[in-house]
Image 1 (tube, rainbow, N blue to C red):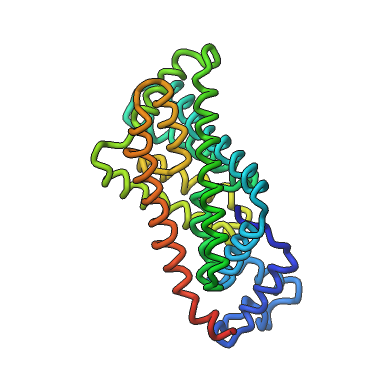
Image 2: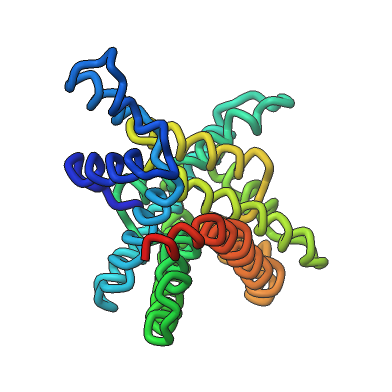
Length: 302
């Protein structure tokens, strides 16, 4: 999850960017119409420069790479469990809404629940790691850094998936939820199973990974609007029926446990194409492009 930097550090970096010859606006620092307090307030309301956003997200990746395996295991397992609430909340809303053309628009807000829990709870989610962890790799260009990134991805993905299966199994316990909710869970799970032709699932996963990685990139500049940013972007993922490797894993695992799908269906029609699409969307369309946009500035400052 995106690390919270202190106000003091943020002000230092913002001032550094503002005073650069490449950024003459200086965030109000030279305005003759403001006193010192007003200049500081103006600086706080200035959008962070792209280089600053890159460094905040990169530091998040560096911190993740430095975590022990057991720390990653528990944080990733917690994230996999938390993401199950997206499936559950969406089904609960669907069960309580009339069967109309706008039902999906409202029920999709339930999908945002798991992402809010994971992000605000600072748990380790695989799809976000496709951005945060790749930036240190692109910046340092060292084999050791790449190996650490691969280790993190393997551990996080495995534990996220295990957590999603545990949550799905808990939802299958008899008598926990009413008949309407169980029916909505069954319907949502069946819809999550991808078609035999996996290309549509792959492309939906590309868009899904793209949006989630962009969300991570936006969070440092969202500040007090972090919650709204998470809700809006993940709502779009749900409304557009895009594929997410962990949120969807709970749904398809539920379908397998309910007998509506098989394990080969889980792997071939969901997991593999969704994993590939999320990685392409997160790494290629966000991490590589955003890094390339500020790479010349990094080189100049070095």
